[in-house]
Length: 263
Ligand SMILES: [Zn+2]
Ligand SMILES: [Zn+2]
Image 1 (cartoon, rainbow, N blue to C red):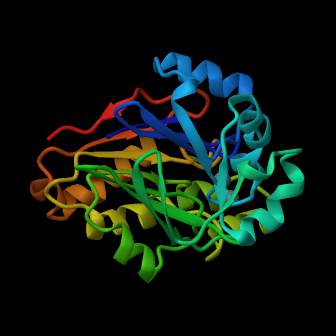
Image 2: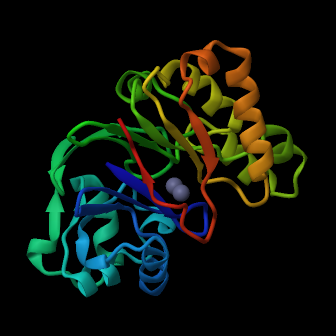
């Protein structure tokens, strides 16, 4: 199994997930041109992408979806609720490109389980993706870590997870009050500390990789996110338990290198 973020943050999100020669995208919130350029940067052919699954209908996740689906002639997968909000924004798709999904589906040979997150969109989901030998947990855009997230996302081999903001920077920063309250709310975004506390529960001996994603440009820095998470994990037993663990930050506009999960 392999994965890479192609872009990450409020200016656009997309994650590539694959196994052998079969791949799919989680969201496509940047232009087609940038998706194709960023795929090329990780030496992956767009022709190997079999579909796009949508986590929620916010524009930083769906901006390029319609155009990309038309260009690659691939289907888009989302729940009925997300389709209701999103369909008019994607432009014209063929009927067989519109796939309504439930909480479980198979895409590019991998089993996907949708895990509801707590966010101010019509619906929003994280994903647990199971390949032949490995599992990947994906969760961004959630104001809190819910019981269900804890239950479903525990014990994966790798993660792409939201470390959106440093709370101090958020409150001290120049965002308007309503926006600070929205981000900090139960339906906003996860802080570095909230995520680290969740990782203490989720990470297991087998966990190899964590990619911190959806960082705020204004209220976080890659250094602060990484140091906060590492600091909290170091103070717990996680660092000893997970001897193979490597934690990196997803770049905002460029892809993270393709990560291959090993035995
Ligand atoms: Zn987002
Ligand atoms: Zn969102």
